[in-house]
Every structure is written in structure tokens, then in C-alpha cells.
Amino acid sequence: MKILVCISRTPDTTAKISFTDQNTTFNSDGVQWIINPYDEWYALVRAIELKEKDPSTIIHLINVGNAENEAIIRKALALGGDEAMRVDADNDDPYFIAQQIASIAKEGYDLVLTGKETIDHNGSAIGGMIAEILDCNYISLATKLEIENGTAIVGREADGGEEKISTPFPVVISCQKGMAEARIPNMRGIMAARTKPLKAMEAVQSDCFTSVVGFDLPPAKSGVKLIPADTPELLVKLLREEAKAI
Amino acid sequence: MSVIIVAELSEKKLKKQSLEAISYGVAVANQLNTEACALIIGESEEALASLGSYGLKKVVHQKQTGTLLSDNKLAAKFIAEICAQQQAEVVVFSNSLFGKAVAPRLSVKLKAGLVTGAVKVPDVSNGFKVRKSVFSGKAFADVNILTHIKIISLNANAFDIIQSSNGSAEVIDSSLEIGSSTINVMETKKNEGSISLADADRVVSGGRGLKGPENWGMIEELANALGAATACSRPVADSNWRPHHEHVGQTGVAISPNLYIAVGISGAIQHLAGVNRSKTIVVINNDPEAPFFKAADYGIVGDAFQVMPKIIEAVKNLG
Image (cartoon, rainbow over all chains, first blue to last red; front, side, top):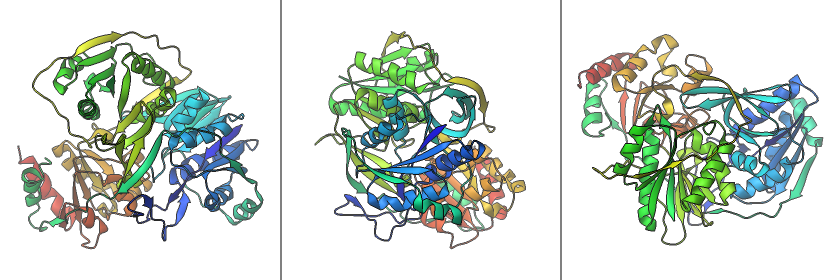
């Protein structure tokens, strides 16, 4: 089985979010970059677990981004991918990115795994776009994944509950909590990652459907109104009369 | 030309998120001087009859759901055909499970730019600029859609439902052939607890400060009294005090209810990322230095075990 795992680079979950150049550019000063947690903890680690069950499984990683992304790609390889590709492009448009990934995913992969969204753009768009370009099934917000007799058995979030479904290959799956437990790379993995292939590739021609023109920060909260602990019923009164929340 | 709103039913009623999407779609149609049309998949006389009052003139109704709701490939194909029939210029989804599964496919199919997680009506003064939530609610981005057809998925609780007194919508029956699905639904399971977290208007959430799962009674009691869903922080779910589907935060469920009450949660930045779009935030914590107080509207510095029973009693006395 061949698995393609999509890896995105995002600011660390604790990064302070601010913008420069008149609010058109994310301010990366002092920002730590990480593998998008959904891509790493759920998509990649689940792929590695599947490979541990069936060692003939091949895991390839794909990232769309510039050379700075290679640090997090090496980290992903240290966790366990076999080889990685980086499409050399600096572009925010989900359709453009999906086209880049689809151009590789069509080369005989059974599974294409993504995180459910990136924690910076919160788009949840790439997986569905790849599936549509490849004309294959897309299972979004998956919480479980098993392989049985050449089909994928997937648990996915459904309205107010969960669904268990089966789908033939190839299939694109977006992964979320429940799929796998986070791991940290071990020393052997880190050493091995240094020599694993990481290939830079040129982007394929694609349209862009959208462009980000600016950012903004939400207005700061006006400050907390503290209610004395001995009169908590006052909170209920304020929630009804002032906030009109109950 | 028209604005199509893909509305969703839950137990034969229009979902609250869909009513928000409809109101949003009507506002976009007014802006563009065109008409808004809802697409309803599934049977509900009641929902169809009410649609005129939200300012819709037209409804396309596909009674047979078939496999449309479980197979996003078929759903995207179907919606693309409706869009062609109605000459859709803008398509509005809720940023729901269905929207997340179908909108990206439709974007490719229609060669239409997609913005997910919109929080405001577009600015059409120069192009078509949509404001969306990014960085897990910590910022907004303004995104220009460059294509002729535009697709927007609207975040929950980002747009108020606008209902006028009367008005009726023309219903157009659709009976498109859906085709067969290669996705086989083997099992469906409902979560316990009556109110689903994603749709909840009010949420009461507990953290490690509650010391153990045996103390969740007061969280549940307050939630019951308020008609709220229950939630928890990540350490609570990781310790198996509460089920994982209740975990709200950056890596769990992101929610945006009208009221979020956090009890015994310190407010780590990853937790805030999942709840900071809530309209009113109440924090109850015995540590005055808990970072959550900075993000809260109302706070009580005190022992939850002392404070909660009094709050529950006061809510029950509200009538």
C-alpha cells in the first residue's frame, strides 16, 4: 500500500499572532514553526501505525512551500515517513495547493491523508479539492482508519455522533482527534531522517481562485467583570439582564 | 443570476446554522441586486413553509436524499447541477460537517473560489472580499475571490438570523437522479447527551480544577438548567474523565456558542483557540492569575464547589 501524507507548516500553537506591512503579512518574528498538529498527530502518525502493522506500506510526504519548510519536513521524516517531496511554491490559494498535491497523488497512491485543517488558515479545503481533482472519494473529519482486504474502514464524525463507513481506494481522508496518539521522534528516527530522500520539485501550472489581501485582529475584550464569590447569583442576573445570554 | 444557500435539516427542522446561512445569503443577494434561493435536501413540509419568512423567494427541494448526505462526491455533482439550473453566482454553505465535505469539491467542479469560515457579508465595493476567521479565532483574514462564481461557507454564530413576519417562497421540486455511491455506511452511532456540542447555543465546560470525574454532577446540573451542552478541557479528556468528543480547544472541537461557562479551566492558549469566538465567556476559577480571566466577560474568583450550587439554584429560580 502507498500512502501520501500532506504536511503543512504552521506557527506553533502558542505563537503570538500579529501582522506587519500594514496588516498584509503575518509577523514571523520570534515565531517557532511546527508541522501542522492535525497533519502530524493524526495523519502522519496513523500512516506510521499502518506501516508498523504492514511493513510493506510505503509512506511519502508532500509539502507545498519554500525551502524554509525543510526543517519541519525533516522532523516528519524523523517520525517515520520513507521519503518526502517539496513543491517549491509560496502560495496561499487552496486550489493552487490542491493542484500541486493532486499532480503527485495521481501517481498510484492508495491513500492520501491530510489533517482536518491547518491551524493558521483554518480552511479545511485542500482534502476535498484533491479528491475532486482525482475524482475519488473524500472522507472528511475521520477519527479512525483501518485497512481490510484492500478497502479503507473509516470512522468519521457525523451530526451528533459517529459513522463507520467503508470505501475503495484511492481515497482522500482528512484526519482529526481519535485517529492516533501524538509521538515524538526518537534518536534513531532523527539520524535516519538526515539521509532520507527529500526532493524539491517545480510547481505545476495552476490557476488561483482566491488571494489574501489583508489581516485584522479582533477587538480586545473590554475587560472581565468580576463578581464577588459570595454573591454568585449576581452572575445569573447579569447574564440575563446585561449580556442577554440566558 | 442568483445566490444559492445550501440549507440542512436535522430531524425535519432547519438547523440553526442553516437559518444563519439563509439570512446571510439573503443579505448577499440584496447587496448584488439578485435573488436568494435555498436548496433543501430531504423531506420537511414545515421547513419549506417557513422559508418565505426569511426573505427567500425561491426554494429548490430535492425530496429524495438517497446517498447525497453520506457521499460528498455525489452531493457536489448534484449541487453543481442545481447551480447551473439556477445560474448561481454565489453559493453559501454553513461551515458544518456537510459544508466542509462538499464545498471544496464544488469549488473545483465549478471553478469557483471558496472561502471557508466567513464571518461577515462580503465587501463588493472593489472586487469580492470576504472576511474569514483564521489562526483559530485569533485573527481575521480578508480574502478576495477572483472567480466568476463564488462559494462561501459561514461560521456558526457569525451572522444573526433575520426573520420577517410573512412572505412565501415558490417551491421548485427537483428529482435529479443521484447515481450510486461507493461509500458503504456500516454503522451509525449517536453520542450520549441530548445536545450536540457543535450546535449548542450554550456550553458549560469543566477542567482539571474539578479534581475528578465524580464531580461532574454540578456541570451537568447547570447545563441541564440552562439547556446547555457539556464540554471539557484537553487534560480532562486525556485522563478519560470525560469522552473525547467533549474536548473543546485547538485540537478538539472549536465552538462559538452564545454563552460559554468555563469552570476550573485555567485557559491555556490552545483551549482559548477553540472557544474564543463565543459571544459571552464566563470563567469560574479559584486562581485569580488564571489566564482565562483575560479573555472572559464575567468572572468569579472562587471555589467552584462553593459557587456552583448557588449559581445552579439562581438559574433554576429564573423561571
